[in-house]
Image 1 (spheres, rainbow, N blue to C red):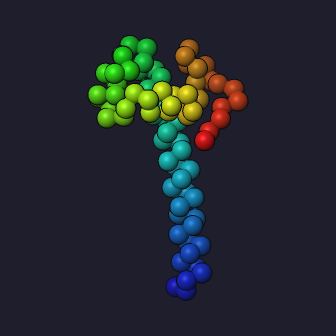
Image 2: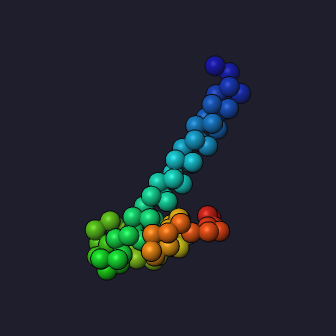
Length: 78
């Protein structure tokens, strides 16, 4: 395999992995939001190993649901 083909293959895999990574962030953010209804953020941080600030950031940035479980509009990912 020449360098160009290898490079293109690696870039395609990277792009695919990045899309899956973003999907998983949404899943985690939505589950954290749901878990916050019955658990304190401090306990979630201990359980998951994710610090509290990051939990709030994940929910604010990546959750596709609001506090009632309804879909959010105008979600910003970044």
